[in-house]
Image (tube, rainbow, N blue to C red; front, side):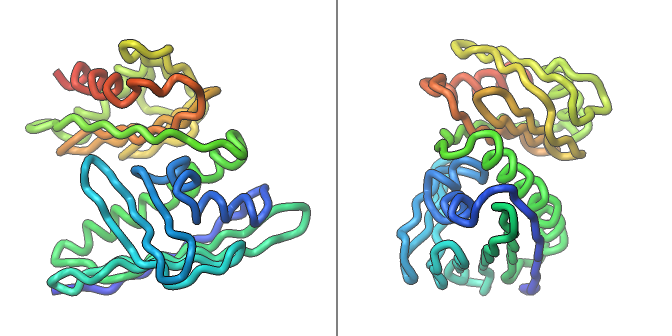
Amino acid sequence: MTHPFEIELETTLPVSPDEVWQAIATGPGIDSWFMGRNEVKPREGGVASMDIAGHREQAVITAYEPGRRLATRTSPGEDGRFMAFEYLIEGRAHGSTVLRVVHSGLLGDDWQDEYDALRRGWPFHLHTLGEYLTRFPAMAGFPVFAMAPTPGRTAQDVGAALVRGLGLSAPVAVGARAHAEPSGLAPMDGEVVWADDERFAVRTSDGIYTFHFGSGALLVFHHLFGPDTQGAEAAWQEWLNGLMA
């Protein structure tokens, strides 16, 4: 049985509406703060695609008003489930922009867990968008994804291992310094800019590094803005495997 849902959030960003539009309505822009590798056909009726770990999700663009409004909707599944996204942009004084996001649709039988995950995730994603637009303006991020299964381990155990692996102390606080040395890459050394009971985000001079931990897997969703991207995904996969060994 499906269940309707709607999540609505609003954030103010200290950049122009055009800069926000580029971040939410183009493939390179979305790559720089959201998840996966993205492509956008820039027109109403076009397709927005996201690839994560070999899985592709597609949505049809139902509204395309540059600098003002973007809306997409996935095709319904066999049980009727679908996702719809709407982004509304409004310029404000002193060069700032208000972005309103509405995420709606139909969820399945385990809708409560799905809804809670979406509700918790959106404030983090909008925070990452703000980090991208203010710290790495006019740059295109290189997305990095890696995953290590954590069978038989609780989310608390996985989180504790991650805290140790990043040279942090529990409880992790925003402003703490994190450090990691994936093989073949320059060391990651930066400041924790987000910390909750599911994820940490670390900002460095060349990237935004996100670590998401749970009872089933440890994931990384990184956005790199420097030249050190060759082999980054394989290096972080090796780092995760070593951490969970």
